[in-house]
Amino acid sequence: MKSLRETVISREPVYTKSVIKAGLRTEKGLGSVWVVVEDTDDIRVYEKFFRDDHVRILPSANESGHKGCEYVESIVTEIIAEEDFRRIFGIRDADYTKYETEKHVFPEAIFVTDRRDIEMMMLSAPSVRAGLEKWNVNIPVVWKKAEPILRKMGYLRICNHIRSLGCNFKRKVKVSRLWDETSHSIIPEWENFLVKLFLENCHEPFSADEFNGIVKELDLDKESSYDVCQGHDTIRLLQYMLVNTQADGFNEARIMTAMIRSYALEDFRTTELYKMISRWSVEHDVSIMHS
Image (cartoon, rainbow, N blue to C red; front, side, top):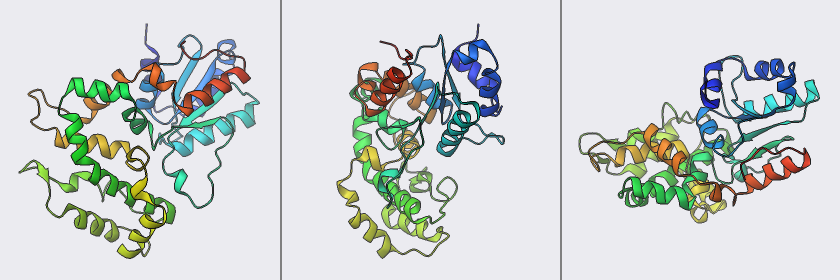
């Protein structure tokens, strides 16, 4: 018998909205609680805490197989409107919504991570930090060395978001550009190089002075790293900086797996996300989380 995760992944890249609509034509589907999350890693996190007997967790795939926070919102909103079905909610990353000029309004039944994203929310949890240190004693030291770099990258991402600068971090401005494979170290003058690289890849006019002005205006230096740093940047840089720390090596997938394995229900219960889901559960008279 397939596990919940195997069942979900086997559906990809099937359009999630169509899967839910088809499911709602069945008695079992109507009796289920549907949860839409951004991607398969999110499923791996949340399935630890949700009951699998009647909770169905799906990634936010659209017709083209694309996934992300906007698709979480649109799928849940459209199912509620088109099917008049309310046993559905979505979980998305907070991203940088807290820094937007106008207060971000999330649609009905959309819940957000307490921190920048699910990775940073896990990293903020004592159980995950302890689990990672037990897995590799070097991780706390490496995190401290990586933190200034990840914060600077986060500041640039925030500017890109609130000013709609169109910089492509995935292809153009990525942490791998700051890593010297030969010396296994961060490149000299990484900070100036990173800002210059960002400015060169903005699609709208933007200057170093404007960047510094936003950092000062938003008081970003006083913000928590868990709100500023991006999870994928963090795991990727940790992967590079953990090279040669243990014989069996480390990569993004293994780090993420270790984080998920360590994340304890006791820590999840302390989050605002857990409280929002719990209130939703009471309002809809359903039991969806493990006690």
